[in-house]
Amino acid sequence: MSRRFPKGFLWGCATAAYQIEGAPAADGKGPSIWDRYAHIPGMMANSDTGDMACDHYHLFREDIALMQQLGMQAYRFSLSWARILPEGTGRINAAGLQFYSDLIDELLAHGIEPMVTLFHWDLPAALDDRGGWLNRDSADWFAEYARVAFGAFDGRVKKWITINEPWVVSDGGYLRGTIAPGHRNRFEAPIASHNLMRAHGAAVKAYRETGRHEIGLAVNIEPKYAASATPEDMAATHRASAYMNEQYLDSALLGRYPPALREIFGPAWPDWPETDFDLIRQPLDFIGINYYTRAVVRHDAADDLLKAAAVRQPGALYTETNWEVFPQGLADTLLWVRQRYGDISLYITENGAAFPDPPTATHGQVHDPHRVDYLHTHLLALHEAIAKGVDVRGYMAWSFMDNLEWSLGYAKRFGLVHVNFETQARTPKDSARFYSQVIASHGECLGESPDTT
Image 1 (tube, rainbow, N blue to C red):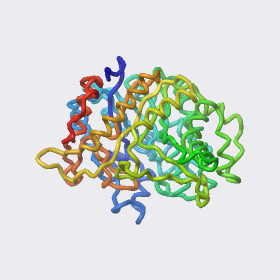
Image 2: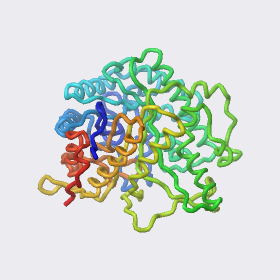
Image 3: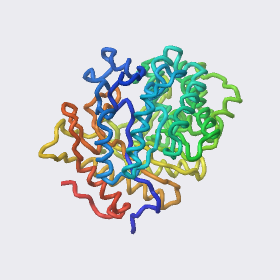
């Protein structure tokens, strides 16, 4: 059976600004909520910060040359909002725009297509001081910023993503306090989610005024499988899926929220104006799917939100972030999206895993057999979904290189390219070479067992 992917399928990799750029105050950049959060004692593993990260701000040309060497056809990256608008609105920082303009030109010169994410979690601190995503004006702030980016880069950039993983922003940033801005408030989370989706809609609406290409939304989907067929476990699985998977896609594509959210949040769930959904539900060109793992769900009365808990699977392989390796979940996810939302075009905008790679390369090599196998099995699952008719148009591996894994610091390595954070040396891992072979063969090599010795 041929493993060749469809003609025009786009192979690439992905990163995010705060995780790789460094240079937090260079050339007029304003602070973001992560620049603040990372310096609060106790918030970051090992007191790590993004102050240096991968120094991509200064090393982007070398990084892009390495992407070309590995055969990357596309590079998904995010803009730092505060690098372009230091106060979040108003004054434009010309040097910040120039950095991204140079980055885009460098990509194009190397034959690599830019895929740009407007917001990957790093809200300008000045806007957080005004309420952040709890302020309904945030949709207008985001649309203003989006117009600046569209005006500067559309045409050279032909694929845009508004917001990356709004669920993580809301759940981690406003409900559980595990990422910036670090709030823990049940009443705030639905408001933040709703305003993120309003901002998404406002940016798409702004793009339709002048944009000439494609724009979409990137969501993280974690398929939920019931631990048993009992009514309690089935109901818990339904709630978990509505909260994480359906909340954002239902609002963006169907113009409504799943009814289970009112049950989940109780009195913390507001009544939203119907007109808000006219803004949120904008015509999209594609959806980005970020897939890492699944959850097997059982009823848990002790959980005060979902009444649900994930069950660890005996004998399964788990990554350094305690996520089960379950490639079939990617195929199941893609088929579910088509079944629920129709034949919208999809990109895999993130897929990858953290494994215990060493801090330094040995003789110019980093062996990462688990990651090679992860890529191999997930790409086979992706091919299965495409063979069943799902319209997937590209795959962006997470991540191009090791970086700051948010609150988990530098110890969790997702990269295809190893980074020595002491010297900033880059070393392609075995997984990078394997992925390079996949790209060169357009997937044909997936029919063979990879060398993971």
